[in-house]
Image 1 (cartoon, rainbow over the protein chains, first blue to last red):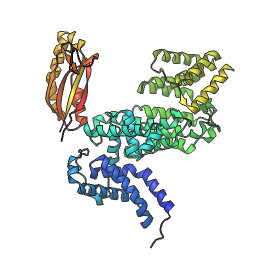
Image 2 (cartoon, one colour):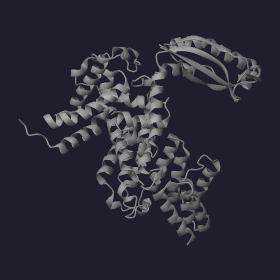
Image 3 (cartoon, rainbow over the protein chains, first blue to last red):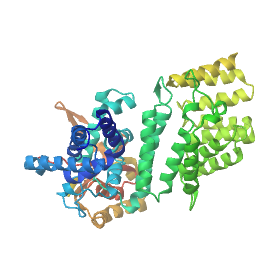
Image 4 (cartoon, rainbow over the protein chains, first blue to last red):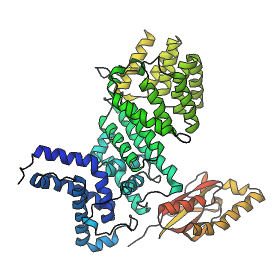
Length: 418
Length: 113
């Protein structure tokens, strides 16, 4: 008989299986449970049971299969216990033709099951914030309290948001399925947007005293990796993963030892994560190939050019600008135009860039967006117009709640008025 | 199959000031709607067009007042009751619902057990 496994190791194995396999196990269990709430409960129970069973019998070779079998058995038991309840359960799951519903002993699950889960969570009939919350809850297996913490909202608020979304899924009959071909472009874009939003929320937390929330960033990258496994032919999925990897490669250098934010040109490039940059750059090459590239591929290409440059000055700015021009066409957005202005400054000078930023400001679509006055301040400083730069930095300062960003802007303001 | 109501909200001035050709086009679109819904696998169970909100009378706490319950630029002008397999099919049908001067809202019908 094998020695009793160490409790610490078992805990780690359960935690790893939770992070890596939750979506797989839940998706496979929904088929049997036919109801997302019941499936969630059974999967939760299976993870709890794993702690005891694996301590007693050792960690199985295939933890996901063990968890799936256990969760499915619990779902079947629940159905047997209460057949009348079952009759009242909403039919959320399309009839399963590939597998008998008593498949508790079948470990095989087609990857589509996780895709169904993702597309259901990101259904366009749900509000964006509900899509994000549901994705974290159902695809990543985060608790409501963890999600609430990640977005710095009160737990009851987040619980209400999740409950409301689940009620709508049931009441309005949002079917648990992968979209049809003609719906694909819109629906995929919603999924990618949710993952990107998770990443950006983690990358620059909208409030709080930390610039980066590594938990969210890690989840977003895990999700993007999973999507690429499930949809290897979708170039925008590749572009998204590349964008996240290359952007996150700079994580450790975005603040100094005191937690103050540093500009791209001030960051220590020798500390950028080369492995992540190489992986991302390779993905960019594929994402750009064949047909017109999408917005994530283009953003990734821009990020990769920055990541590969030996210094800020040596960056291939003309090519960055060219990519921005394509991005503006692929994805017309005032935020993209604002970012493009920085490249314009490098290629055609700050004067020209400033006039484009001022034009954006007059349009008013970016009112309240803190990076507009910050960019304006940066350009005015370059032109030696310090008084105006100070006013712009003050305006930016008034619009941000992130401590690291506030600190940074306050520093710029002091420099301008010195 | 589940039932949904497609509520049509439009700027009433749109229909009121439509040219005869525009009016004809709008009516013809409504005429085709039933077949289009069927082609998508759904069914139009019922529906009505409503007289403009200038003809509405509202009652709140037994007090009768002239006008609609809520004053909005785009007012409820009609509805369809449809049947569909799920929300995606209902939305596909709703996208074809003619509403040249506004848009539509889709609401699932409540089922009491």
